[in-house]
Image 1 (cartoon, rainbow, N blue to C red):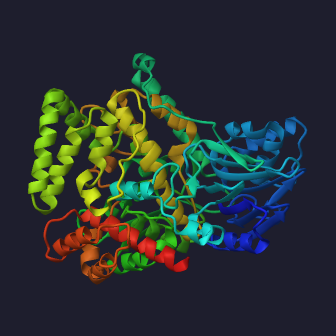
Image 2 (image 1 turned 90 degrees about the vertical axis):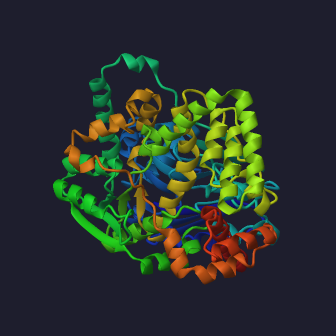
Length: 612
């Protein structure tokens, strides 16, 4: 795991590149390197995981190629063997050397041979081209800028403070801000800055002659394979077991100590159980809460005791939470509204203090195997709406729209959301509306430039439409972004065992009845866990990985809430924000989530503009 930054730009200097790279040094405190030649700048910060020697130093060169690389290629030994059979020799045991020689051998198509997580930049000095690659699932971030025949890129947005003009640094993408106020994160190819984009997962960018072309090399469609309905359940279970063992064991490839984030949930329990079987005693890390309804540490300890792990447990106190919130936008360099960022950052800190350099985080099980409780609920609601017919939905839309204008406070928001929901004809539009925390009218009143989230064209049954939407948006730009920033802030590497592309492709084809059956979510995955753990250890109510943020804010951040939201910038309607704030101060029922998103954006914006 590392950090990368660079550009092709004749107006920039080596000093500019040094600044772009130095500001992401937490991603790689072990080593740094710079390549600066013929208008090309490549900067690297190294966190040594595989081949800890200086032979793994980056930038690395081979003939006319120069590479900087963030991430891991777990199957690098297999790819290396194939390259050796073609006459290539190797001077290190580093996966970076395998990547650059794979590119030399197969060109951009080499990426299809990799099992891993990565953001890669490769410059061909001979033809003055530069390639950027991002892994299939988007585990590793990669931001880029293309304008006026110039290219810049980085693992994190903060590097662009030292590249963009003052005007570009202050140009906010209002569509991205609309999306953030709707769902609490910024998805897919956008960033909060108008001129900076995210390279989508499963894509590579080629820059040559001042122009960029983006190519998709991998995609997955969540459509059940009807033929699998003829297969025996035990056969599917065996195939899943084999895939899980392979995917999880690949994530243990390292020359340093590896640990696991363990909750009492199905996904992290399965990761810990499978790897304990193959590797013996693991290091596991759990956090607890003093607040009831959030704590599951005692259940996690039972699993750790059963599997015999070396278990570390810490309670996240309000004091700990305040320290993290006070540095929130040092960690997250783009607006982020997910309150689970706090416990994720804290558990990363615990792992770092324990001397672990790699941690496995069991994300994506819900998106792949239908684990969110909301899936069953929304399927039921959609079916009920269809019974109304188009005429009934049209009438209901107008009734609730009128009620929203006549109702006070949070009740108006609820009526507005009902009105929005009833106006939708396609399921995915309905789903995007229902997961939004505010009504369209409420968002427009606070933020006049509000724009609806762009729809995705999805096919198949409605469960798989939800899974695919969440896999491509929520998972990538909320969950994976959160885990990357939290772990990298503490200079440890976070890995995602469930995001092996072979496992993803299996889950995407899995018939719905193996995801949700008789109201039970993650049906097949739980059946698999039953091979490794007693039923009573994992058949527990789902809590998720949230935090009692509303309580903490009221007890500690009341004054800051008023100060920050009392001085909003030109993006928001001050009268509407003042009204929300007044209701908050009076203890009235309000749309607390929208207030938190506004507060979160303002904190980010104040820090960003102050530093720029």
